[in-house]
Image (cartoon, rainbow, N blue to C red):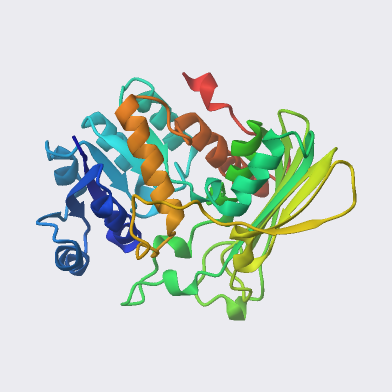
Length: 354
């Protein structure tokens, strides 16, 4: 029997709704958004008859087995909790939470439920990261002693509603959106970021254009395994979009390309040799889906949906379950605290809250 799904938040979630609609193992039952035009678009493009303006109405629908939450980040934790309490499995966009209190509440509720929770972190699935993980698991890189991640993403177009009111992104501090940077290293190694110091900087006031957060924040972490990890995030810049990841081990090193090549191009050396190999990576073929489904995050969305549905079907933890989601999220919350306190701050282990 197909897993019946409701999707909340159609600005980002429309591409995910298309994936659920196309997959034979899921049935797109309903969508939810506060904007009527988004609901009308879903009706027209996907043939969805059941459209809700209120999230509580979506999770109250007894036909729905699972809810996919792609609403604004400040709503994630609260809506996940409401969906879990309503007996739904949950796939939720990043980040898992924006405060320590929200994170504790997630642990309190989800740990007492038999429902599946998965955070939809696409960077665990990007081809370059999959290649890094294969080298690490084959012990080609040795022990990682230093890693770094940069997520530079100018978001001017997303910081204002059409009527010029600020969106949630206009005041989101960069380190509160950490998981695109933290997830590749943590998912690959199983390590945990345990302590952080961080700094911030901004450009001149005449270029603010109403922006209400630091232009850039950089955090330096100590890890449980004794490595050093650097994370730099920025949402106000003239650089456009750029990702970058690097992993330095005692037997090899790995770096992604920059800008959009970060997803598909990598450079690595192995076997204690200085020779660098450049490699282009690609996603696996996914016969379950049409090649036309390339919108949004493309194949990473499909891979996430496949893993989520599989986890629900067999009742096993998904690749990015609650604890791993919080391991990826809490360092950013602690990092922002370190920016404000100008000193080292401990990153809590969410397992200690059980």
